[in-house]
Length: 123
Image (tube, rainbow, N blue to C red; front, top):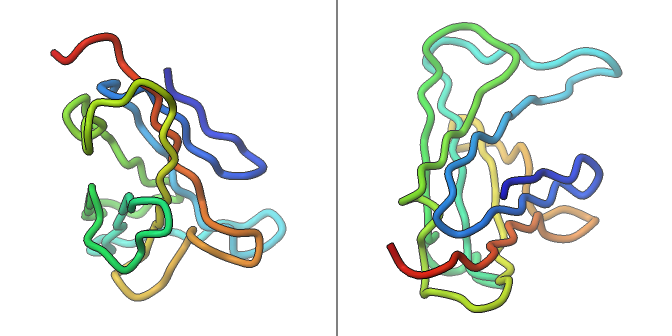
């Protein structure tokens, strides 16, 4: 299972499932930032209330062509971080551009949630 809530930006995925997260940066009412060759988009997942610790997962995407959308592809191995779980577990995530501009993360509405759901058995 994989789902992104377009309002809250919560990402929900079953542990052990692969998914592809689209990243677009709005710069106007109907305009989006154009990622340039050489841009780096970083996706980090942290323990809930754990921004002061190393992330469970850090994926860096090197942009190879000018585009308005970059996809963060998580493999089934990427979503098997942390301990095996028997109920949904909440993590926080952050997306950065070029390691110096937070695109999506903790803001005045609170943290961005990465909800991990249990998988059936450890493979």
